Length: 132
View 1 (cartoon, rainbow, N blue to C red):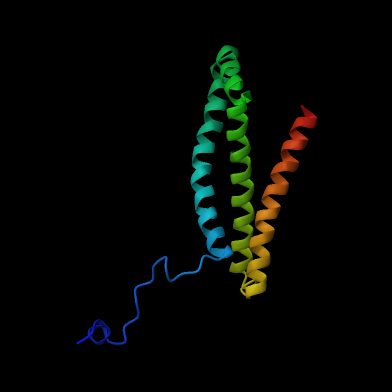
View 2: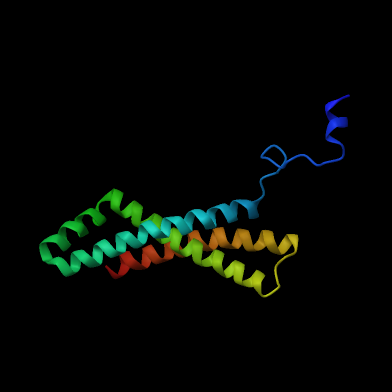
């Protein structure tokens, strides 16, 4: 008796070799990752506010960290995560309204989320540097 006979007509358990990675799957994973990153970013915001309340010396210390190249890269990533998660939430809201379930609409929304999040993040940072 072969393995196939023992198994019968039961389907194989799904795993990574069966699934083809598609853009909407990547967007779902990114939405979860950015949600987790927002927890970390909220701690950074809380630290900055606590430093502002603690006094000018400590506030300057924290601003010095955030103003460094690594600090700015982390803040840029936080900004992108915030914008990307927000646009992903809007995508989910569209789905909650019963729209955007077609293949073309799903792909369009996924691409719009990626392009929109990168564009809005760059625009926010450009405006921030212009105001500064």
